[in-house]
Figure 1 (cartoon, rainbow, N blue to C red):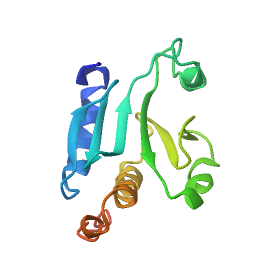
Figure 2 (figure 1 turned 180 degrees about the vertical axis):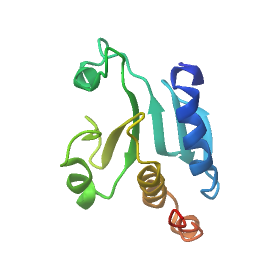
Figure 3 (figure 1 turned 90 degrees about the vertical axis):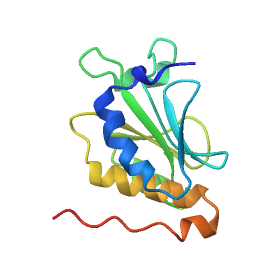
Figure 4 (figure 1 turned 45 degrees about the vertical axis):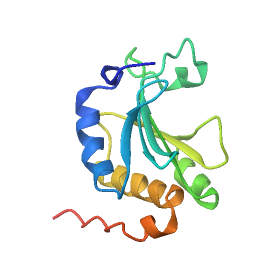
Length: 139
């Protein structure tokens, strides 16, 4: 199992407040990186994969550094819309409703907040999803 240090602390510092505001969501170490869950369902998973071990990520290497990847759930009917534009988004190579995004200096954190919130609503029981407070627009 990997340690949280596999993900740059500045990325975790951005993701943690987003995920903490989701009712009953919790953080835990994953088989690689860190994930946030509701019950036993993963809402978001962030990790730094080894492109040599996982060649699907080789095309996402930036300046010789492995990418920091976050996977999340998207309603199946919205998956193409999220991933069609390409970088920083792509379809994860598993699951029928799993998208991925490369995180870094280019990241739009407002968009990431919306995507994580939508992922939570996709995975959470309806009564918990109904308790999600919409994110206020940036001022």
